[in-house]
Length: 137
Image (cartoon, rainbow, N blue to C red; front, side, top):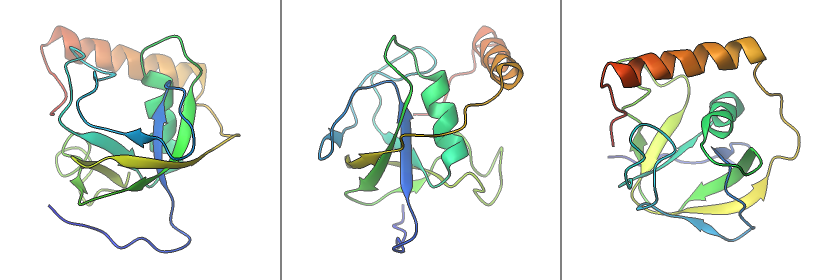
């Protein structure tokens, strides 16, 4: 595990369909948006708007797709679902923490992926699910 210094210009994001307010905490123990939807031991966040966009677009539920600006409240580590094996060096700046994320704000305008990109990703996730591949908790 490691912490990473955050510069004043660096932002962290969390994509979801949850309706949250500034100051709310996003905590571990909630149902996953992916796979078998089990309770997660981690909260996930990213340093790129693109990765957060995927999180918002692929999240289950009927709520509006949202991207929040968040602040980790404790130590965090690279997200093993997206780093090392898939994207060495963590270019997606994807992380996870057992400590809560504090909501600092919401990104009001962001560019969604194209319908073709979204279909391709959903098809890929469906193939993984059919093969019994689950995200790492």
